[in-house]
Amino acid sequence: MREELRSLPGDLSDLVGRHLVAAERALEEDDPDKAHEHTKVARRFAARIGVVREAAGIVAYRAGHFSEALSDLRAARRMTGSDAYLPVMADCERGLGRPERAIDLVRSPEAERLDRAGRIELTIVESGARRDLGQQDAAVITLQRLPELRDPQPKPWSARLAFAYADALADAGHQEAATDWFARAMAFDEDGETDAAERYAELTGAVIEDVEEDYEEDLDSEDDFDDAGAAEVGKLAEEEEEDDEALAEADDLLEPEAAEPAAADEPVEPAEPAEPVVEPEDAVAAEAAEPEAGEPADSGEEAKPVEAGTPGITPAFIEPNFGDVLEVETDESAQDRPKKNDE
Image (cartoon, rainbow, N blue to C red; front, side, top):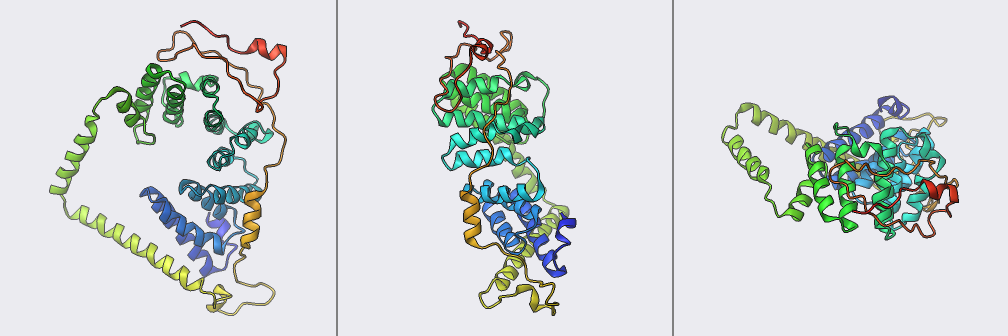
C-alpha cells in the first residue's frame, strides 16, 4: 500500500494512509459506517490509486452501499488487473436486485482465473443468486458440486461454505439436514464469522450456554482490571481521537473555498500540480451503471452427486428448472446431471 501511495505528495500520502488505517480499525470494531466515512475521504484525494479504490469498494460493500461498491471495485479491477474482486462484485449485483447479472459474472471467462478460494466464494454467491430467482433446489445442487463441502478438515472457507449449504437446505424445505449442517458450520466457525449458532438455536430450540459463560467471564475480567488493561483502553482512546482528528482535518481540506487542498502547504510547480485527482460524481455514477463486459461462459464443471454415506446430506432433490438463465442443455450434458435418488 505504501508503494502505491508514494505517487502522492508527502502530506497527502500521509493523510490518505491515516484514513485507510482508520477504516481498517473501524472494520475490526464492527463499525462499517465509520470505516465508510474514512474511505470516502481517502477516495476523494486518491481516486486514481488502485489500493484506495479497492479499500473503498470493500468497505462500501460491508456498509451495504452496493452501487458505490460495484463502481469502486470495477475501477480497482481496471487499475490493478486483478479478478480477485469478482465474488464481491457478483454479490453486489445480488444486493442491487440483479441476480441474473451475478450469474453472468459467475460464468464469465474471468471467473476461471480465480484461485480455489475465489471459486468457492463465487459458487456461494451463485447459490444465493439461484435462491433469489426462486430456484431453491438448484441453489442446493450448486453447492453440492463442490468437493470441499465434504472435507472434514477446517479450511478458511469451511464455515461460510457449510453455513451457505445449510441455509440453502433450509430454504428448500430440508429442515433436518439443514440443522445438521448448521451444527457443522458452528463447529467450523470459531471466530463467529457466520450466524450458524443462532440459526441452529432457532431450528432446535437449544440454548447457547457459551453466551452466558462468556458474559460471566467478561464480568470477572472487569473485576480483575489492572494497569495493563487501563493502558490498552488508553491506547484505544488515543487511536479513536486520532481518527476523529483525521476526519476533522479532511473536512477542513474539503471546504468549497479550498480548491487546491494540497497547495496550501507549499507552492507546487505548474507542470506537476499537487492537488489530488478527483473523479467527477458523474463519472462515478457512469461506472456504477456500466454493464460488465464479456459473454457468460460455462465453467465446464461437471455436476457431482452427493455421496450416500455423507452424514447430514439429503440427496432427494427435485431437478432444478433454471429457466431462462442457463442455456438449453444438450443430450450429452443431461446424461451427466446427478440423478434423483429416493430417500
